[in-house]
Length: 136
Image (cartoon, rainbow, N blue to C red; front, side, top):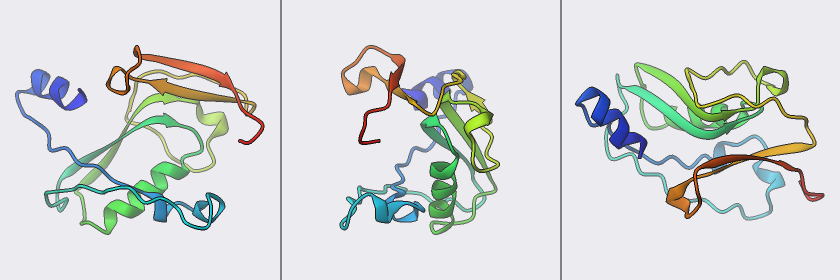
């Protein structure tokens, strides 16, 4: 949906890729003995391109750091920007990561989590602040 929206505003269809960062995370050993690695699809060169990473929630910044590390294995972008649907605010950030584009900012406690629900996943578009489960 974002690709179509950008194309309608700029008359240019941006290239679209999928990046799995599982093995680039700094906590992957805590996810279990055999992490599930999903597909990465980058059917184009990243060299000298403006790359916009898009993520649903920005919390500590560690996912974004992992994504930037992963991107570098596929080329050297001219510039990397960050688009976030829901930002939990700078107070919870562990790394000096700041988004270029933000859907909204929700300052939450560490006892809460933010979930972004999208119509592409079968939901009405909305952001929900929820209590963390005991397993989190």
